Length: 195
Figure 1 (cartoon, helix red, strand yellow):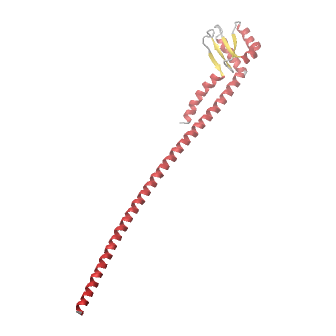
Figure 2 (cartoon, rainbow, N blue to C red):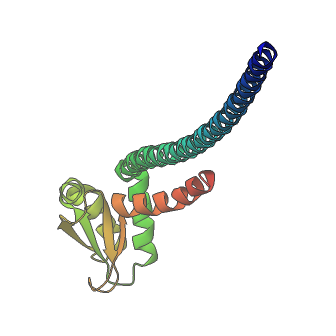
């Protein structure tokens, strides 16, 4: 019986060791599977984070690029507006200087002499009419031996309007009309610069 007990003990020990080994192997397999799942999840999470970061970086890059484009556009518009404003001021100053010079009166006299046989009506700013009434206007009418009608007007500040059809239509040679004309011509050149 001693022999049977010993065999029984050995058998129990053997079965216990086998059971423990089997359980250990099972635990090890479960641990490996769990570790693999954790690694898979970690890789997926890492890929999601990287993908999200790339997407955010691309969006930020696009926003920055759009912002810079808008900034450049706004700067060019502002620069163009400042150039236009300066250009208008320069043109107005030069036109006003030209109208105030004796050269303008010489040009006016040549225009009137060239169309002397027609009835001429000239509208002048009130301040110029008063200033020229007793000098230039009087001398010009004596030279032409024909009356040229000069009329004061509040419609223009600098320059004149001249009519060859008793006021039904007229040509305007004023600071505003010349400034507009010159600005239009020069702004075409400016537009070419900003293309």
